[in-house]
Image (tube, rainbow, N blue to C red; front, side, top):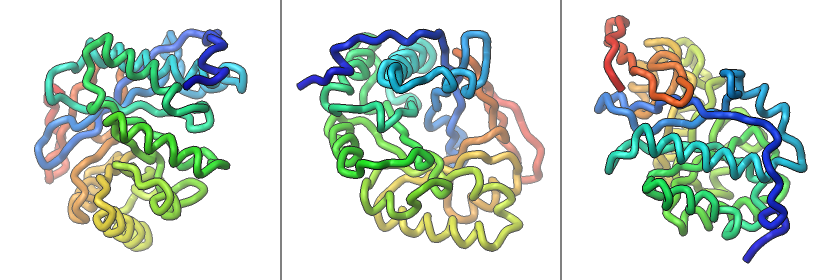
Length: 257
């Protein structure tokens, strides 16, 4: 099975690299995953890179991002049973799921990075016009033992309706829900409801965008143990940042990740 995008061989007309940002397990004080975030070759932000993505090169860019992330991850954290590698993908750049996943699988095989340690995230913020197509993508990825995730959950177009349609393995709560959650009854109630729904569907919940100890403690009280944010570390280009593990008193102790 193939598609014209796979056969055409369009090259990405600009250079880029990846920064890595940890998702930590506060109950074990270990890194659960590293998210690969696209950056320019001189450290430019994701916006600089994404501004150069067009309809013509979107497929090539999506494929190149996956390969680049896997190659760098294999150099940085390829120990057995190590952290997951989280890669963002563009659902609208996947034409034929079984064909479009080949480069990802080939990169994993070539570098020795276990496929079941790769998590592919799509954002709720990207409008999805063909629900059945996205369902087919997730089914294909799950059949290949890849982990699937919805990023920025709670801030996009569809909300809880996405869970009924797609049933991913992981949902990542958007930072808009997390910010000052310790002082906001509305956010607290919404996140509590999402956690309950996720529990019934057997989904893993990650909270992203944590910047304050108070936010971390409020989320911990709700039962969330997987967290991501500047409180713990900032992304580092082509390397792994040290983790700062906040104490309950609010003082951070810097430890190696």
